[in-house]
Length: 50
Image 1: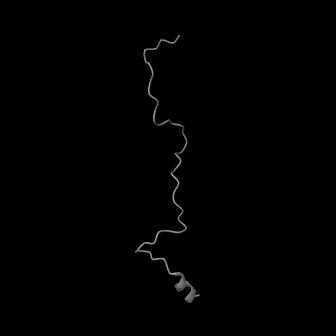
Image 2: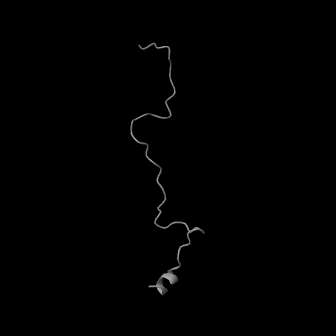
Image 3: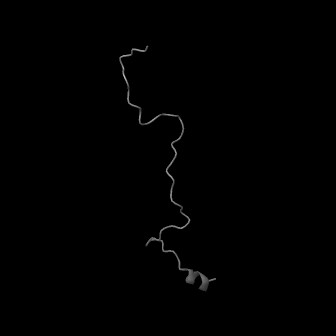
């Protein structure tokens, strides 16, 4: 029987594995949110200029 004096230790919150941490999934940037600095051209504008 193991009679160590350490007792039960709490589990570590971060386990070092040597791998890169997986980044959180980023939102799809193909359709960016319209910004006042970079206005998205209107589809009617694109049709008139084509």
